[in-house]
Amino acid sequence: MTDSEHFDPIKQSITAGNRIYSFEIKMAENDSKYLIITENRTKIQEFHTVMVFEEDIEVFLDTLIAVLSEGQLTTKINKQKESIYLKSIRKDYPNAYKAWTKHEEQLLILMLSQGKSEQEIAITLKRKIGAIKSRIKKVALYTKPIKE
Image (cartoon, rainbow, N blue to C red; front, side):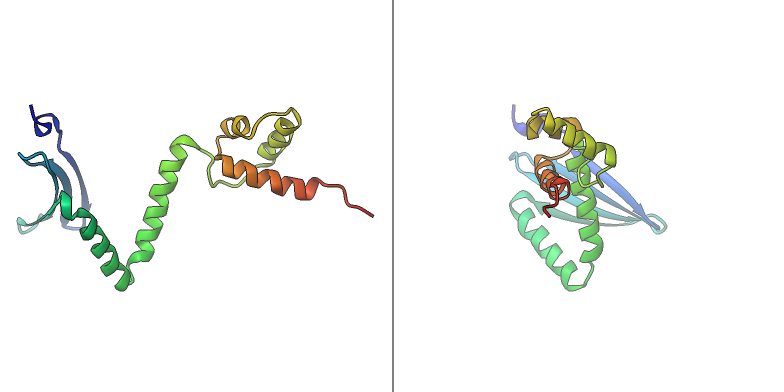
């Protein structure tokens, strides 16, 4: 059996006005994947399709991003990428990049005083280790006694 016999096509569609854009990944008989982008203009039953083969996908995306950048459409893309990035990070660290609450800060100080590791604190506070290290430094700055 080939990989293509076990591959379930992946498809997502979005509706924008009177158009439906579909993105589908399929596998060819030679086990290479390809992307199909389809625009369906619902009112006039018109279809346009673009196929991008696996070996071309990287240059396709690079060129698409370059054209969008030049056309100054990347502000929206950057916000969307940021949103996608945050969603993916927050699967593992639900509090990542959120403002620290007083309670979290107090818990951080308490756990430090109990000798807990940065890893243990990160798990408890559901934040990345880098955030814990950064907050420890910040807390240390304003909890140090002022020398007279």
